Image (cartoon, rainbow, N blue to C red; front, side, top):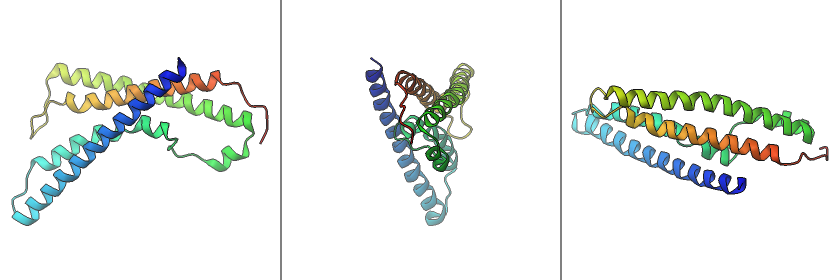
Amino acid sequence: MLATMLRRFEQLAVLLAGIGAAIIVVQMLWISYGVFMRYGVGRPDGTVTEATALLLFPAAFLGLAYALKEDAYPKVLFLRNALGARGRRWLDLVNLVLMVAVGGFFAIAGVSATLRAYDSGAASEILLWPRWLFWAPSALALVVFTLYVVLRLVALLATPPQHADR
């Protein structure tokens, strides 16, 4: 059951990262259009800056779970390699617990911000897009990340420790 849940969350991580990549492509095209309008035509488009800034926020968080899946977070390997199997396990446990704490905090903040933006009906200044549309993908990504970290933590705790040292 745990392996199935991990696989599902890994698939969800890939999907969210793909959505983040699509947002970045849209930003690239929109910025290119803005540069052309400003310097080629001489008529800057005021929506470009706001739209790309608003789209940057969800794009930043949509790849969190995928980065964890791919083990792409920075590590101090010389310290990790100097430890024995038990030390590496403890370091991994501490790392995952910290990720749960930080991810959980930001997930709660993201969901709260999404709900408050939805309730208030706040919109962006120029485009008048509802602000909750930019908070919702980030909140979803943070919740998925936190749940995925919890699953990884449970999987690590369920795995018997290795006794072979170095």
